[in-house]
Length: 228
Image 1 (cartoon, rainbow, N blue to C red):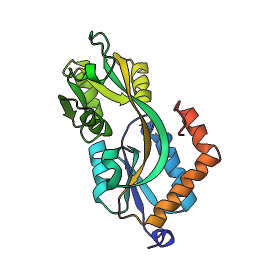
Image 2 (image 1 turned 60 degrees about the horizontal axis):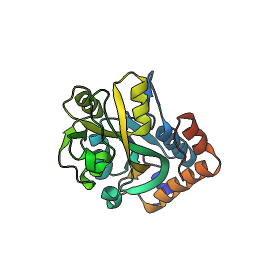
Image 3 (image 1 turned 45 degrees about the vertical axis):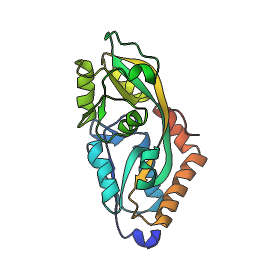
Image 4 (image 1 turned 180 degrees about the vertical axis):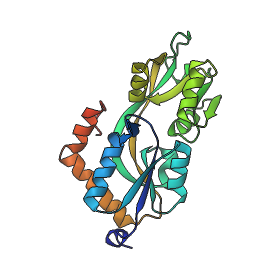
């Protein structure tokens, strides 16, 4: 089926509340990834919906349900063959953080492995921690619960987007950065049932946003590094 024929159907996009990539503020959805997805679909004139939900459900739907994509998804090796990719929407660094005043000081992965590290289930950071051989990983059902565990000393460390970390600190969360874990590319991850020509057209629409400077402008507005 061609992308033109697909225009008669609707693509379902799933996402989570994870600033600055996708989030809801005063009842309005926005973010680096959100704005680009809206522009891509407007360019292609294909009907779509965007649903915000917990991340584990969002990525599971994109992997199992036809005509479904998830954003803003980290493109990591563990996910390579599970989706069709449209990228990059953004890049960011992942840092390891602790509760401020905890007395914990770690400078690298080897030091951090000595502690209990928490994250949300099925998040890309779970795969990062497993890949780096962390022996004690505490998995919560959502991001907010993981943060609460960190602030109440139920876990010791937590990986998170650097930009999201700065947002949390600005909101008054008692957190401090320990070290940079990885630099990460973020993308739209689509169910493998999406026709290849539709993926190509979505990629071409994203490429136009990159070429005309729109992506760079959006990235600057949200304080992100520009994809290379």
